[in-house]
Structure formats: C-alpha cells, structure tokens
Length: 180
Image (cartoon, rainbow, N blue to C red; front, side, top):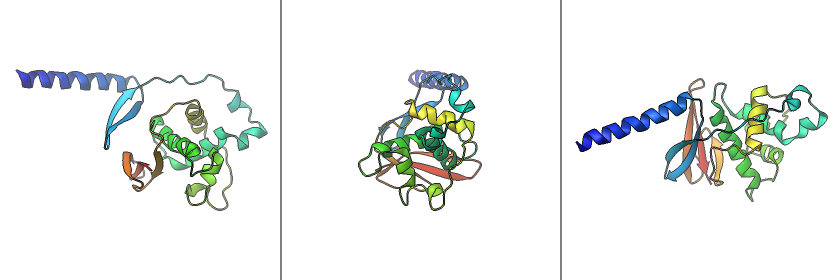
C-alpha cells in the first residue's frame, strides 16, 4: 500500500511538471543543497515596446542592452533555450555588483582575461533580435540563478562549487555555472 501511494505521488508530481513544461514556462532554479536544484516556474511579462528595435539610436551602441545582447549571443550556443541564455546574463549581472569586477556590463566584458569573444580587436556588432530581447529581459530583472555568488560561467568547472551545467547538443559542449 505504501509503495502504491509513493508511486502515485511520483506520477502526479511528474505529470504537473510535464504540464508546466508543455505550457512553455521556463524553469527557474533555486539552489537547495550541494548541486541539488529544484525547478520552479514563473511567467515573466515581456515588454511590448518595440521602438528600440525599429529605430537604433547612436546611444544604443554603447548601451547596457547592446553590450549584454552581444555577450549573450557570443557566449551561448546556437539553439540554447531562453532560460539557459538568461543564466549567462545572470552571471554577468552578478559580476557587475561583485567588488572584484568593474561596475558596468561593458567593463565586465572587457575585463582582461574574462570574456574571450571580447579580447583584442573586438568590433561591436548588431546582435540578433532574439538576444536584444533576452538582454532586455535580464535588465528587467528576469533571473534563473538568483544566488549572487554564482560568478563563473565557462566550458570547465571553476570556483568553489558547480551549481548547474548546461549541455549544448549542437556543439557537444558543457557549460558550467559556478560559485566563487
């Protein structure tokens, strides 16, 4: 009887998660214990103002949205889901407020030895529309890595603890999101 109840409870929980995933709600990860993640689901409204995308002002080229969108496009894989790309934005935003990093997005990205796509003779470019929208979402407060100590994102583990990994099935690489 006890086994039947446990099995029934597991089926109900999995069914609820499957329904939420089918509804297109991205997972939000809360750190529970060492490398144990519990997905919760939150709908975040996307601003309907499209003026930024139809007319690009000179100010756009040096804006937080532009720099963050370039980083999201350069650091993520081709077919990453939105929530995984936003985790890259989370790490960048955590670094902006961390005492050992510059206090701007541009400063964090151009910090020597930190973000390889921005090394050397980097030329700013116009990011794809998707990454501009994702940057707007990050700057509006959407976040999946809420612990401000998650400061590293790379193709190898670093820092004191790997919190979550994302496997890119197209490139065959794993990105590690780690605490200081």
